[in-house]
Image (tube, one colour):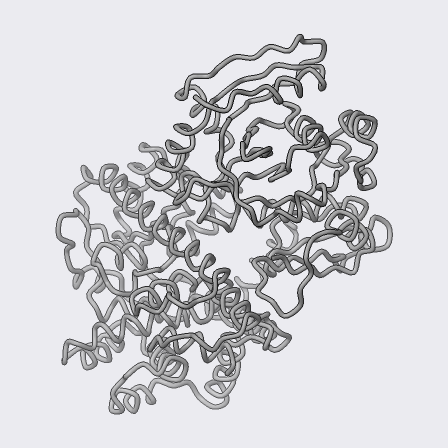
Length: 275
Length: 353
């Protein structure tokens, strides 16, 4: 549950568009209090800026007001990975279908979000696009169904691929280039409280022109690859190590190199469900 | 009931929190977190068997606070281990201060306390050797700006902070406990002379009265009560624990006089009693009255301290809080250096912006 406070119209519009299906409550417990505001300085007139606050502390430098929606989404990500430690958090997307769940960890630029957006547009349930929360006690993933963040060329690709989905206006000139958000399908949001058991760990890698190729990864190699995308692993100590071990024990780990979305998705549809 | 009161009750005599509403939980959790006391709150609720019945969401934040506090303790233990290795060969007396001292002597105040920076106190003549040894073992200065380096070396009571290259943890090496430019000059030789060795480590810690006086000086002479309640919680816990020794209170007052720290001691006793109802004998309170500043300073301080530790009903700092905080900030600078030096320092800091 997030409490949002902002006088900025693009934040209000963005939240209304992207979180349309989310429940709305007053007088409840908010996990995070976020505020996006205009700073009181000389920039106000010529280069309007946005400053963001998490529980009254300001974690980022001010950015141009046009980027407020991207600032909001980054601030929510920050709120989660910087203040939540009762989950093991992976920098990864997660999707589920028929009770089987794929975790897609990958560094930026690997095409993780594009693949994730494509798959949820073809019947997979979106658990999360950016941060995967794994409970150390049950090993299950708690979904968030927040919007999928698409960057640069993949925005147009996805708008053509899945025109039935809802996309936010583009946010230009961010540190990651141009960003637009794709709203989570209503069904994924409605099932937000249904946890999911991990089945596969799939490291996607987009490479223009590459033929689709898949490799089974040994668990050790998967562990090492994962470690660069672990957000709070060291803080969890032994609990984190056990959660990681358990996660790798129950998943089949693959690496997929792809350039053609349809081909890649065909492979996802044929994934084996047992070890 | 005001959330301020609920928080103070948890910190002193935890009771079941069954009748709090969700918005009240929201204010409680976030205001405790803002002042760095959520770990402490979690510890006290868990120790009192009071976690059951707490709604899921606040419970989750308490659990997170426990994990953070456990991690800080683990980091601190490991840092002490690494510092031991770096400094063992020097064979010079080294004291652990504050959080590290509370941890290695297993004081109740260390439970759920969040802070992983390590503070050391050494003889001024040993500063260079200690700094050299730490640098040889991977610590390096973070403040590389020439002015900052000089500021620390000439006017401060500590070396510029040393941060470990790989682990990112920070060590502050002090040669005394208050800035030499300030008004009060407790003699570090006296602190070192009374220090108590720690079992199993080549370090010592301050004796109990000195530990309280250092905490008082840190909160009310050198500091600005930025974390307000947290400083007072430290004092409260230390006083409650050390009071088990019947002669503690007499020693505390005598030691305060000996070390020239009676003014911060007055404030510490006054606000521990006022805010957290620390059981301080009436005779001690009366004796400490003699250390109070002249009118209208105590009245102003009462006002500022009350405002800086309270929050609005929504748990966020209000106008009076911000005003009090800026007054205490100005006060801490005023006490830290003589006016001309202060002006020079402020002008320099302003030009640098």
